[in-house]
Image (cartoon, rainbow, N blue to C red; front, side):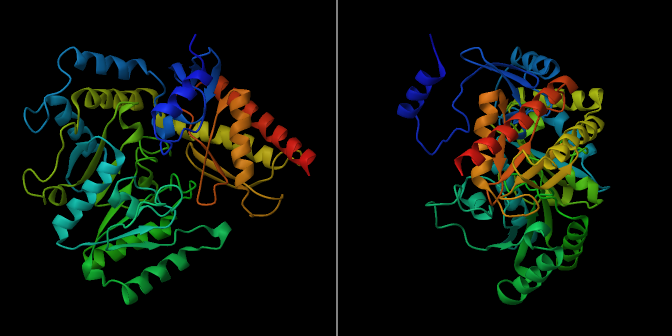
Length: 434
């Protein structure tokens, strides 16, 4: 019989330690917001494949679209023999992307690939080389995207040198002493001390930081960046790889600000678990590279494009933007109640945009001193209790909630009950150890 322990022994012998796993369980099957391991144990899934499953595990409409395409063909290479699902998906996203400008879309395979292509397009359009990103941001694990990423461990440690002409600004975190004014002042100082704005191709920002801790970019900052970009001919790129496809109550999180970016990078929940990523942007900008300058062997795979069309159908049919708002409020109400409990682990800041939710674990009630050890212990305890949970953040102390938007209220409530139980158990264990 296959079990988790024997599979972990095989994993450690066969795969490099750099490919770490958050849990030691092996998946056997999954449905919507539930997962069963190879030993038959059921889990409530609050991780969603790291924000990939907004429409749930094995969504029937998504699978039907993919199966229909697989019966036709699985690959031609779009650059050799193109196909309709790629074009149809581009047409739909061009219409759905925010702003009145005409749009075009490019499809690739991974989020990092989408970011790399957005930077390539920005450099081709502007004729400039500099790129500005933010501390705490995560943009991928390739050499360029590691350079853009604003977190050293584990993503950049030991992998340098990184590309030049990449600069970082502090991301607003008021609870940790960083304000919008600090970010604006840092940008002005960057232009004075490190690179003139006329040499900057793009500013890339996550409207809600993902791996960085679900910090929400204030509308004031996004509007200021738009003004700065317009003034100096810089392109504004919204990295929506984790925040996109209704997670925040809008198809793209930047819609909350009313700001139209020049390009949006997207992946994760775009195709319901099938590998697909893309860039949607202003048509004139997207047309800057020469023919053959963009693409890739597997980019815009027909099965993945078909699955993405299924995702868009489900978003409309199920009203997932409205569902994200309702689900998010349901979860946050429980977290706020938990934060008032003295017998639970101390909870600090709680952040929410739609159903993109995180809360910080802190050393003591009423403080903002990060407690990364508590976050690690909570995720482990929650797993023991039947809940898949992920931590994140530059301090390692944030717990993120990424439950599928299609989850039933009953399953969401079950997951929250397990989370509360785990908060109490870890607090009790910690008190006993002191």
